[in-house]
Amino acid sequence: MDRWQWIVDKVATPEDQENLALLARVIEVDFRGRVEREKDLTAFMAERYRWGNKTTRRRAMRLAGIGILRWARSERDHWTKIYELVSDVEPDAQATSAAGVLAGP
Image (tube, rainbow, N blue to C red):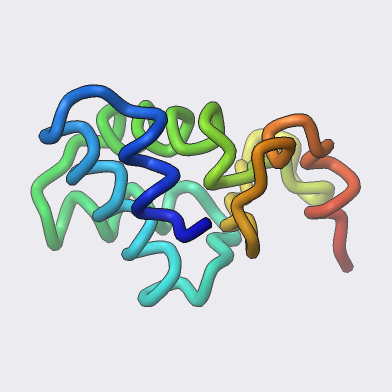
């Protein structure tokens, strides 16, 4: 199932659907599916779309909640969040542990 259809199935209002789809598309295209620092994503969204930091974080966590996005804390700096798009959205994608998937060098 593609990301857009997954968002439409999981989110009720069209405005929320569009905002979440926009964020997913930005992560996919501008960050190549992986955001190494949450700060980079919030700065990008603030500059390009005039979203506040809280708005971006909240929407990213909603994407994680519905299984489109995974997040974890950086091993180098525990305060930094790393986001990664789920490659194939599956019904059980939400149950997958983010820590094992995002662990890296």
